[in-house]
Amino acid sequence: MAKVKTTFFCQNCGAQSPKWLGKCPSCGQWNTYVEEIVQKEETGRGTWKTGQAATKKAAVPRKLQDIRFEEQPRLVTGDTELDRVLGSGIVPGSLILIGGEPGIGKSTLLLQIALMLNQIKVLYVSGEESEMQIKMRAERMEAHSDNCYLLAETNTQQIFQQVEALNPDLLIIDSIQTLHSQHVESAAGSVSQVRECTAEIMKFAKETGTPVFLIGHITKDGTIAGPKVLEHMVDTVLQFEGDRHLSYRILRTSKNRFGSTNELGIYEMHADGLRTVTNPSEILMTQREEQSNGVAIGAMLEGNRPLLIEIQSLVSPATYGTPQRSSTGHDAKRLNMLLAVLEKRGGMRLGQQDVFLNIAGGLRVDDPGLDLAVCASLISSYEDTPVDPSICFAGEVGLGGEIRAINRVESRIAEAAKLGFKKIMVSKYAIKGLSATKYDIEVIPLTKLDEMYAKLFS
Image (cartoon, rainbow, N blue to C red):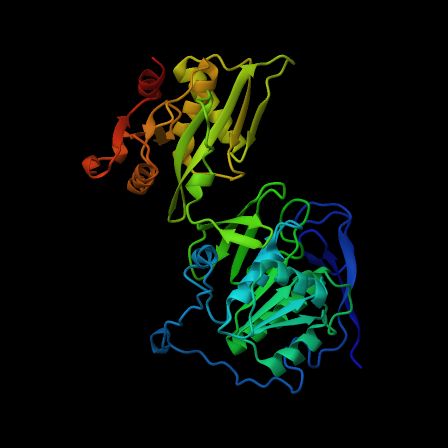
């Protein structure tokens, strides 16, 4: 019998050490190292096949030009938002990880996908809920499929036995932190268990060409729980975000080996499941009965999708000494930079003002093309004068107060014209060679913040 091997793992970042350490040299956290048994015996470890030993011909080097490449057809789920985020569908043999806060809708999304794919055989493996609980959720969705199979199991060897017997076209694991392998003697959810179970599932996906969805828990910091190697092993990492008290959910891509990492999918949560939002600009702009100061509409890009979002700001005199600077959905450091530009280049006295900035709809943005809209919103609140609601903005603001060009300004202008805006303010350098007459909107070129102030508030 082989000797039992133990080692120490950091529960925060997954770093490994042969001895216990008080402080992790990788992430700097204290008292995070835990001793775990990493293997019982060397024979037969790490294979997903249960009935026979895995035999494989030894790999030999091949010339790159001798390798034949064939474009594999993607599996289209019918969910337009998920297909866009994945890059036009699911790639055969891919391993997709979805993370998000508890109760955000990860299980609902994947069960909905499993019920939509009625033409293929889907196996939904749940380690957290019973079959009756999943059945109740499916009844609320009012969706039915003759090819959706449920399995309530956490042992990977038992799961692979059922996979070999059923031979599904798509496998869903809910969740990876609840699985445990017999080859590792540690608790489910530990670093070694998550790594071992993911390795077995990845080997199964690559050898059989079966796509696999993994649901992952997150830590209190918002990162996916378990070792960082988990995100390196999978092909695609999706983040399911949103406020549980609001109905809208956002699906982002942080890693994608088969497509862009800048795409965005938006859903609306209902009692009967998640509904795709085909025109998110309408929900990101509040319908108001009357004009309000401190509100401006900005045109941004998320991947290939142009969005128009509402930016709200409140500037008021500080009454408690040190002025507050707070932003929701926007980078706080960039807000401070724009405030400094407005004070230095625009002559606004913001040093003793409380400033609050909010991106309506719960969206988190990082597009520099929203700088002009943020400045317009701040000036509007400071001057206590509303911005014309028929005007939107698209431009980056430099430290000298200049309006800089942004990418794909044509898409932003077209989106603004489609939603009925009359004017859009952009950088003069972004519309060189652009025919503004083909859009049903007036394009106003700017070079400095002073010009925007003169056109809006003079």
